[in-house]
Length: 249
Image (cartoon, rainbow, N blue to C red; front, top):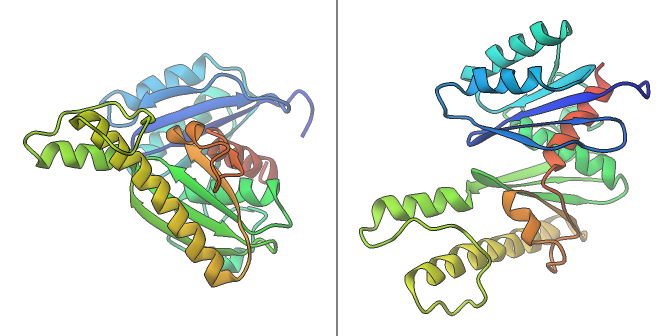
């Protein structure tokens, strides 16, 4: 890639459309648009028009708006964006990639294998869904877990329990909540930490190797230094998309 190339990476998730540009050294500011907004495509393309970039890449798990954003970016830039999927070059063992794998999970694996090419790596993505995905030093996709994410769980609790308030998820100071809000925070956050511990332990048992653990998603910023997390990076999925762009343009 020429030094002057700037890559625009767009990650279309179930909750947010996240985008940023990378100049070959650093990421710019991250811009977010609510995916379920009736004007999400228009808002996204308006943001894109304000960005300077020479190449682009799009990862999406929301098929009904993917085509409109891909076409919009193409018209704005006069170039076809790279669209992340199992048919592109990923740097992974293609035969090991499950046909149903989500493009966000694929991006996570691409970045994980690039970052730690000689390690077994598990990425824990705390998004709308809580996913973990594991890759071997040979670039083989070993498997994935998928469950409800933190805010998805809280929303379900709020909608089904009459006396549960809507809350913001902050790190609790104790697991011994003394009021409803503190108790929910402790239950959800320590509960998800426990899930991560359990999954890491089980995967290590099954593969017979220690894992390097990367956390991404909005909650990951709280996890750096936690015993099971070697690296936390909210831009990890975007980084995987950027690497996919480099390999396919």
